[in-house]
Image (cartoon, helix red, strand yellow):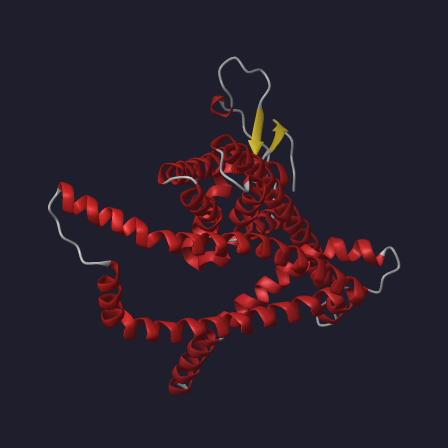
Length: 358
């Protein structure tokens, strides 16, 4: 029995590691289905079949994302091509400056390129194969997420009914209540992201317009959306394109100004704007909201950082339902001097002293 238990534990450990990626895809699909549910219900109430409503919602979201990628991608590719054309001339000017002022001789651009190809060509070829494999894995994961999300949205009540058939009536009520809370918190999370994206878009457009950077409106929209809906690296992707366009169309100083603005605004958003918006929409304490994102991102990576707030808000709402809280004792530690009436701020809500909640 001990030997069997050891081998069973080893198999479970191996299977868990192998299925971790699939589990992450299913979690993403589940939360996407919760996010799409309000739009699907809006169409269903207007006579559209649920499967068709799910397809319309997902296709609309995909077209909106594709439109943004097409707009920003065209700007990005054109600026990269322009930058590539200017690199040889820039290298030549740097070469002449080093030779005239510092008597430093650097190789020509053609010689430097040939040396780089000879030294790193094989390594780049190997990495290209790895990148191709990663792209295929990403396509497979995206396909899995899309299919599972569609079936969850299309099934809707039927899926919840089939799941609850295995549970006792009391457990069914608990599962449905938890489902409803999770759906509300995910909707609040999407609302939070949209508000923050709108603020970032307006601020970025104003700054780029003052700086005189071309394409201020599409660049601001790209920065606002990407910085909010792409976890971890969204800030760098969102700020990289405006900096690149400022570099190619204006000057390096303008590009540094854009980068400084992006970094500065990100700090203001992280510590001032985002916690307050999250506190209003997700009913979370601002400090808790920031710590949860940092903790989930450190443990689970980009997926944890993206899903941290709705998961934490769901857990918080469930805790409020199932964990009893008690009346406060009389203590001067609960209020500032001169306060006759006590108000305790708990999870973004104000409660008068002596109020009880379960």
